[in-house]
Length: 373
View 1 (cartoon, helix red, strand yellow):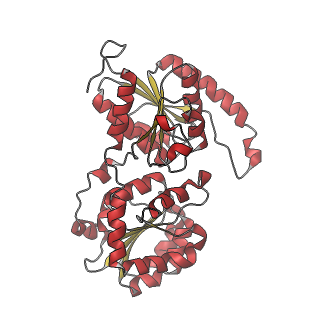
View 2: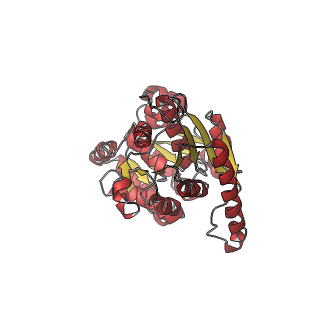
View 3: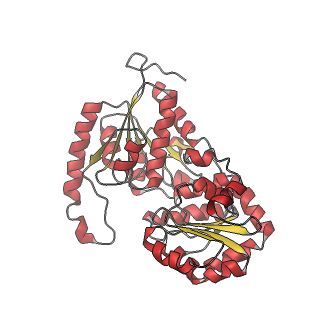
C-alpha cells in the first residue's frame, strides 16, 4: 500500500502516546511496526511517562521515545496527588514543544495517563487522533478523548456505552509475534520445562510481577496437583519466587520460575491455564485456544479485568473465580476442569472463536485510509 502525502510521496509522521504497562506498550509497538511495514518512509516518535517501563521497552523495539513529567491520579493516597496539577500543566507545555518540533500528521493513543495531554493537545490543534482501547471497560482518559477522535479501535464489541458508535472499529488487540508464530510442539515444550508426556499440565501466570492471591491459592493446595496427576508450570513473579521455590523443593512435576521468557513454549505445554485477565493476556489466550480460569485483579482501574473476563464467561469461553474466593475455590475448580473433557473442549472451541490474529494491520490500514480522505 502506498500513500501520497503532503511530504511529496514520503511517509507520514506519527506520534504514539501512552504506556505504563506492557498491556499498553506492546500494542503501541505493534501498531507502529504495522504502519512502518505499509509506509516504510514514515517517522515515529513515542511519548510516555518519564521513569516508566516504556522508557526502556520502546527503545529496545527500535523506536525513539521522549518522557513527560506526569503522574496518574493516586487512588490509595490523596495526599500524593498534591503535585498533580503542576505536573499536568508542565506536561502540556512539554507536549506543545514536542508537537512543534516533530510536526505529526497523526497522533495515536494507546491508554495510560501519558496519552491524555498528547491527544488532548493534538485535538485542540486539529491534528487527527486515533485511540486503541484494549479493555472491555474503557479507561477514563480514552472516554474523554473519544468524542473528538477520528477513530477508536476496540478489542471487543459492546463498546458503544463508552464511545460514539460511528467512530468504533472492532480490531482486537495486537499480540506478540512470538505467540502468533508459535509452532512449538508439545514434546519440545515438555522437554524445556522438564515435564512428563502422560500427565496434564496447568500453567499458572499472574502477569510479569506475579499475582499474590493466585500464588497463595496454589501454595495452599499444592499437594492437590500431584494427588490428581497434574503437573504445574508456575510463574510466580519476583515477590513470591523464593517462597514458592522452597515449597517446591523435592517435588517432581513442577516447574517454578519468577518469569517465563518463552511463553510460546509454556502455552504449547499447557492443557489448562490460570491467569489474571488483563487485555493482552486475554487476547493471547484466545489465540492459543486454552481452557482458562481467570482470577481478575480486583484493583485494576474501573475493575476492567473483571469486565474482560466476564466478556468471555458470557460466551462460554472461560471460567472466572473472583479474587476474594480464590484461596478456597481456585485449585478445586481447576481440578474439576481437568476431569471434565467435554467442558475443556467447549472452552477451547469458544475461546478460539474470539481470536484476532491481524489486529495490528487492521488498525494500520484504517489509520492510513482515514488520513487519505
